[in-house]
Figure 1 (cartoon, rainbow, N blue to C red):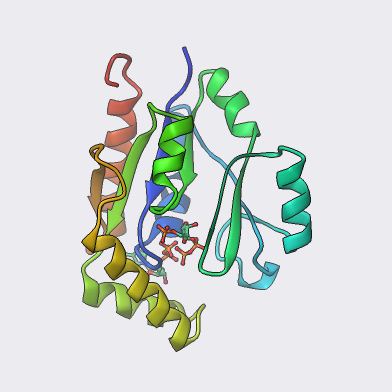
Figure 2: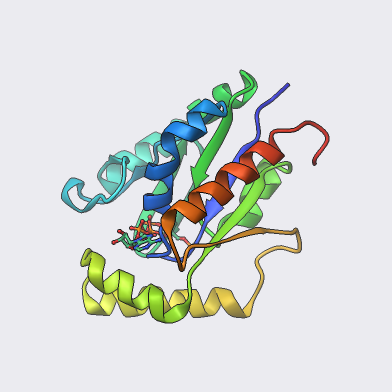
Length: 189
Ligand SMILES: Nc1ncnc2c1ncn2[C@@H]1O[C@H](COP(=O)(O)OP(=O)(O)O)[C@@H](O)[C@H]1O
Ligand SMILES: O=P(O)(O)OC[C@H]1O[C@H](OP(=O)(O)OP(=O)(O)O)[C@H](O)[C@@H]1O
């Protein structure tokens, strides 16, 4: 049986990277791998285990059919390597650090994916983005504005699992592991 695609989303600063890192080993124990993204972001500003490429290289890889999913956001291009499909076929579950704007397209290609949205209270989100210090104030404001847009409209009608990360990261990790355990059971789709 194919593995499940766990599609993690959440606003910038909600803690996706932190959650992924903290959950990496326990996820592996649940037969769930985290796929590395290809991003047109300079290596020094990559805050995650991603492959940084130039926009030209990204385009080449995309034209060569190297991505199962791809999208653009915040002035960057993101690609999910086709390796993901081999893992799924082999029965492994795969966690993707996804995009709210791309969810609808992802669902078209992977109708049984498990959508998971990481949420954080507004004031906590701003504080965390400032503390992380990766973006300029202007970029932080743009990310917060993008978040407001998503709050006002749902991108699909399908149910999305919510994980709140306003509190301890360990609670969010446990919640994610629970979801993966539950989603991995056959006939839950
Ligand atoms: N539960 C948490 N409690 C306190 N700080 C957190 C928590 N989760 C994440 N952070 C911090 O918030 C900032 C944003 O987290 P990050 O994982 O980079 O978010 P994202 O990948 O969604 O943009 C980082 O500085 C991270 O250390
Ligand atoms: O459509 P959205 O849900 O807004 O998502 C847009 C992009 O922003 C995030 O990327 P990235 O990891 O570069 O940003 P972050 O680390 O600041 O979350 C997310 O992983 C998406 O790739």
